[in-house]
Length: 212
Image (cartoon, rainbow, N blue to C red; front, side, top):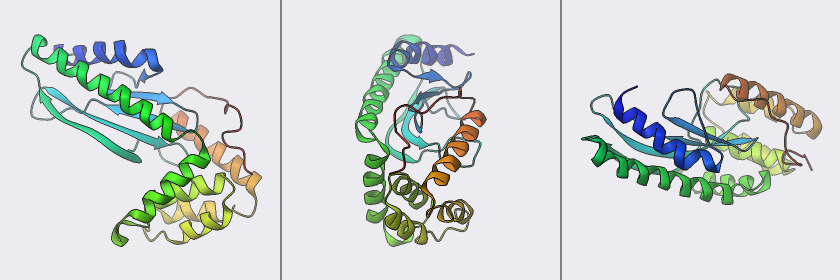
């Protein structure tokens, strides 16, 4: 690990670990686990220079994939080049503090599946027509389906035009008439996705995924 990588890790550990984050392996990615979604903080590297940018996003776990994605992404900071520890440490501290603030903001927004459904549906409908109908529509539909908004979920799923997304949508559409089976299927999806990401198994807290 280089000097600036170690510095990033040390600062992130000091600021992010106390609020619940864990480092993903030895990477520059830090995760805050909410059970059904993650806050993702990436101290973004560059192939051309030492230093770091910052990306903070929400990642939904109701998907059949083995990688992280920035599913709800509204915060980033431009790349800061490393010159020395003395120059870089306050900059990284500022980035980590910004990450903590954005993580708190996301946690205040996505307090429940119902809250996520409201936000994600509004975001999807506000997109230009050419940008609608992809993974964001799937995520909005899943949140609506899991919060009992079956008709709205069906409408959202039917808007998906992206062929890459259709298999995931088709699986969910087939389960809309059976909320309990939908929930069980989503719990399996989330468990498998958590395992692929190296996350510990986690019992769902309270009724976060309760189908109404």
